[in-house]
Amino acid sequence: MHLMHLMRALLLAALGLAAGSAFAQTHAAAQYKINPPPSAQLNYVIEAKQSGLNLKGNGVVQWNADAQQYSVHSETSAQLFGKILDARSEGKIDSFGLAPAQYVQKRLRKDATTTTFNSDSKTITFSQSGQNYPIVGGEQDRTSIVWQLLSVARAAPAKFTPGSEWKFFVAGENDAEPWSFKVIKREKIVTPKGEFNAVHVFRAPPADSQGQKLDIWLAPSLEWYPVRLRFTDADGEYIEQSLEGVSKAGA
Image 1: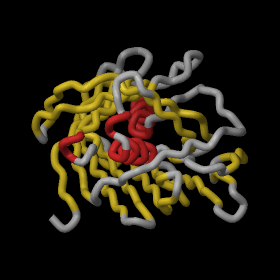
Image 2: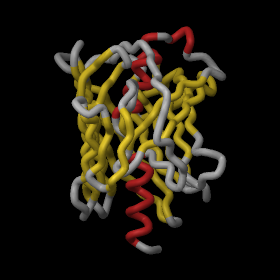
Image 3: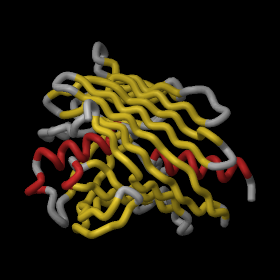
Image 4: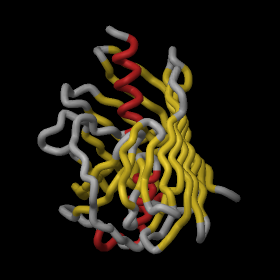
């Protein structure tokens, strides 16, 4: 097993990257009404199979939002390695939903990278590349996207039915691309936090890509927080995050 290969797989999974897919320089605005959930800290346990090795770890997500702004801070740690990812997204809330201003991520043994959503020039720029994209409304980053998705679901639960699709434009550390989520079904799942009747949402990489698949289970009975996330590689290896606890602000 090559250590660097393992670490790269872990980090890509934590970020939900779809490596190798094409990106578009222009995109249509995706405007949805949102109803952000209450501010909270969510704790997860992590299980993974990478390069034939079974790993365990933990993750913490701190979500904060009011009527005008939001922030999400995610930390992921794995046994033997310690903290492998620190990612933060913050910005305003506008008529399109979450409107990131800055997305910063720090990987193990690497410098932090910054993706900036420039309100003056209406462009998305990257510290890691010369790419830039126009801001037309509704753009997300790879940390904000899950919270935009569940905020959309909270605002229109009757429309979040099996077969429905929800499209976004998502920026990473050096480029951006369209993401499409499809609601699969409701199903009972068991997590360290307990059993939930969850809404299963799936994002597949483009057909010509060998990128990761992303499964998200949202719990309507728990403010639509994500109670499980699973990142699956083309070779069947995976990383799964399961909810262990939730502490709402002020509770």
